[in-house]
Image (cartoon, rainbow, N blue to C red):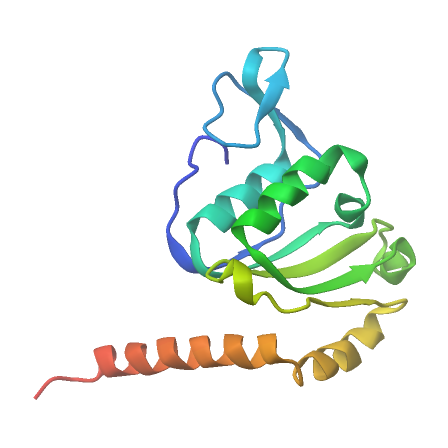
Length: 171
């Protein structure tokens, strides 16, 4: 992960391992910090994955992150960095009990960031919390009525049209 910080794409969908401490000399990421090997030698796995995705996505990043990311004082500096480089579009918090039927109990959040935005024209993020997985459908239906959703749909439509134009047989 930290050895390949440049991967270009329009959209990134990531589900990185949470809170694994990655250690290596001279990590080429802005949010790497001081570690046992000196400066820029330590970073948590989900922070590394999100930084790489945000830096390299030309449109959107969707991620599953630990829910504590938004409430942990230790990630405040990184959250500030994210907000300078991307606009939060959607966040659905899922406490641990949401996952108990699936055999796990890790609180997490689904987030979508828009990486191509104007600082002066930010919209309010759509933020909700669900208590059971079945509530996710209703939340997504509600989100479909928001401006961010329609913008994302327009972007996808433009890409789809360009792709179809490009793949048509030439006569």
